[in-house]
Image: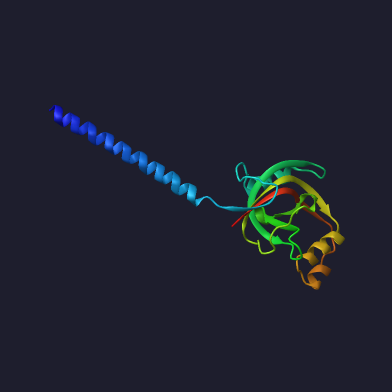
Length: 168
């Protein structure tokens, strides 16, 4: 009887060690799946980044002249095709945010479209003039017809990034 109890205890301890090893292996696998990012501008981390849906909600609450400091994650929709000096990122409901880089201190790769990115900086609402919108359209590689079709100022969701992470 004592041998049976001892054997049962030994089997239970072996099984619990095996579960612990499986949990550690699972954690290591999850760590390996984490996205690797290239850093542009200030060195930032991905921790604390809000979703594009949360970002859109925050933009809707802003009035012209308001700013908020934060970090959010989304996909890059478009990049300046002259230098990589600005980009647009997806928000919820088909909206987008126009991202510039603080002090014109860094640029992003011109082929970064459709990649995941995390930006850190200041969000604000801006009214872009027709002249500025045409300039951005030209830098974005739009046709002359598309540029000429811009006739009204536009309320934009803007972001001044001091650091950007782009998935590798």
